Image (tube, rainbow over all chains, first blue to last red; front, side, top):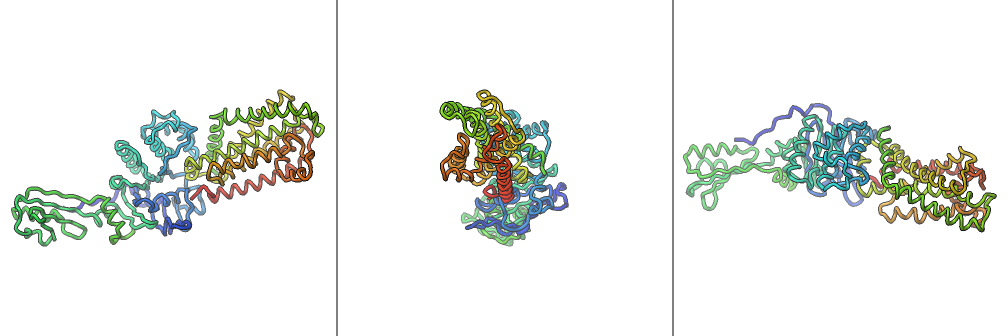
Amino acid sequence: MTLPARGAKPRLLMSAPVLELQGLTKSYAKLTALSDVNLSIRQGEIFALLGPNGAGKTTLIGSICGMVKKTSGRILLFGKDLDEDPVGPRYDMGLVPQEINFDPFFTVAESLHIQMGYFGRPRDEARVDEVLTALNLLSKKDSPTRALSGGMKRRLLIAKALVHRPKLVFLDEPTAGVDVELRRDLWTYVRKLAAEGTTIVLTTHYLEEAEELADRVGVINEGRLLLVEDKASVMRRFGERRLVVTFEQPQAELPEPSRRFNATLSEDRKTLTYVEREGTPPSGELLRALYAQGLPIADVETRRSRLEDVLIEILRGRPQKAA
Amino acid sequence: MNTLGMKTLFAKEVRRFMRVPGQTVLSPLISTTLYFIVFGYSISTRVHEVEGVPYLPFIVPGLIFLGIANNAFLNSSSSLFITKIQGTVVDLLVAPLGPGELMAGFIGGAMVRGLVVGGLTWAVAAIFTGFSLQHAVVAAYFLLIASYVFSVLGMLAAMWAEKFEQINFFPTFVMMPLTFLGGVFYSVRELPSPWDQISLFNPMVYMVEGLRYGMLGRSIFPPALGGGILLGLAAVATVVAYLALRSGYKMKA
């Protein structure tokens, strides 16, 4: 039994990248927040950027979205260099910022109408209602934004980022402070957007979120992009599957089939453990061999690595490559 | 140019101050009217004429200018500063709004507030002194350029300020002294030396005198002089504001 492979998604179009970063660097007086970052985002994909606090995720998104002045490098948004045209490409992008912000003078609906206007879209009541409905805010349409709860304010941020139908959306920790049910609803909405062709770049601390949503993941730490790879490939290369077989009685010695697998026997000689990694025989093969020998197996447990385990390995500096 | 974006920002700025009319329109109107009543009536019994004009009508242009300058400055400075503080500046930076659109939106909104307060002040003053408009084009020019200059200066102050103390510095320590020393309640020619000469470096003197010429037909300076100085000030302020916005000065990290 091998780790499941993930085939290419039909919706990932083989067209020019929607976003390209070339040698992107941001330096402050005492700190380099981004160092020579090269990245290409494909149309229609969901790209998750992972990294610890202070790694440079928000600075990277800020550089693209206009909140941070880069020190050097190029940013090409929909094929256009932002140094030559800092405004034009922005019509088709949206951002859900990390920090909650709201204008207390306006209602929820007014905030969305204003946002649409900023992005050059004519007034569209139906679109505003559609987005509010998708984000469970329709009942708060005419409420002042200051009256919303924290979770509602975060949903409003998402609504503002999507109301003008952008082709590329950045989500900077979009589900922070959101309850589990809403997080699942938002994931469903993000998948729907991606299926419709919207490209999504998200940063998140919820590794389950990246695991659930991302086609590709990038890992950034101390301003350097350490890795960019298909999520499934990352899981295969760095991930492992652990097979734990419990016998009914202690075994006198390591069962013969397991010796060539480099499996280990516990001290009480009742538990056999095999760690499957890339390049090692699949754990299913060992299991079949043990059953074929008629060994008295009481229990079998397999545990697959989580993305969290993989991230820790990458940040610890296990050999990796950037794509 | 993102015309719709610019119009959206302008409309938002106007609606913002109209949401709190008591604070943004009524309050300055009351304080300007009080200046008129207190200064005008208490001093007009002792000072019957200034520069050949009865005292009450003499101070009306200055009070209108006071309303325009303070409120145009306050609107753009408070709106942009609070946008920075509360984080909604992100909406403006991410959107396809260039420096021109941002300036048109904030300055336009501030000019509307300044002119509304100035217009209402004029209406109230007219109840006491009657309506006077000798040179309409000149008056319109000085009304508009005063509201424009102070709107731009308000934007510059908001871009520079990082704390509330800094944004409050300008109205208290710059605007108020300059406006009160700008010939609103007196003629600068009646100041003792060297203050009469020093006053010539205060651009507000030219705005007040220019408006006085437009409304009353009398001024101690040729209106073209004041008009030219103010046009130069407006041009410099505009270029500085445009370049500051384009570079992201204190708005981008």
